Length: 149
Figure (cartoon, rainbow, N blue to C red):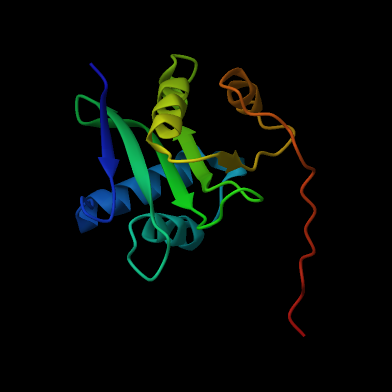
C-alpha cells in the first residue's frame, strides 16, 4: 500500500529525510530538473526554513521506498497570480505509468488553498498528466536571462 506523507512548517522532515527527498527529486526529474541547490531552496521555501509564504512537500512511499515527491510553494498572491505554484513533481523512473504521479498531483491540488500554477516544458511527457487533471495553458512564459556583467 502506498503511503502519502505531508511535510509543512509545523511537521518537517528530519535532516536525513529532507536530503533523501531532495536527492530523489534531483535524480528522478532527470533532464527536466534543476540543480540540487535550487531544489533545496524550493523545499526550504515550502517548509519556511527562512522568511517565505511556505507551502508543503508530499512524498509517496511503499515498503520504505520513495516512489514520488511533490513540492508546492505558496506565492502570497491572489487573483492575478495563482496562490500556489507546483514547483516539482517526480515519480521514480521504475514506477512510472502506475498512477503514482496522478495520485500525488490530485493530493497536492486537494491540499492547496486557492489556484495552482506550474511550469512545464513543451516536450515533457508529464504535460499530458497535467492536462488530464485539469491544467490548461493560459499563458506562454517568456524569460529574459540576464548575464552577469
